[in-house]
Length: 106
Image (cartoon, rainbow, N blue to C red; front, side, top):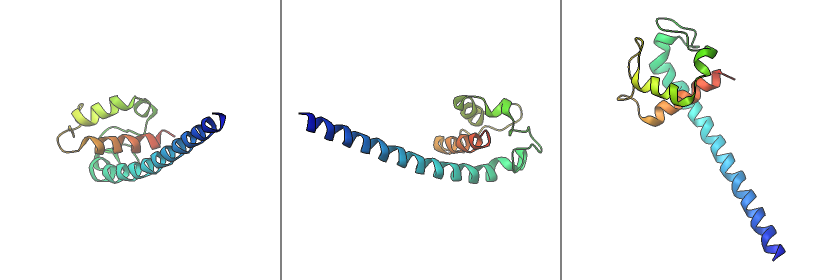
């Protein structure tokens, strides 16, 4: 019984490591996809580095510290002169943008 329990725990730990490593790889891909989208859709107004241009500076702790859901909602619905992207971007693309914006907060 003890041996079966140890094997089960070992298998569980291996599974957790596999899941964590695949999540990390996906995160890296999400970051790259978000960067491409940002350059294509956002940088014209917000600047290449989020420094602001035509539109508000978004590389700013006041913005980057907002919860993910709030960032998603703003990208989706727009506001304060920013167009809504909910009909032109897929939900996962909006998530990629949020991942990319989060990379600036680090």
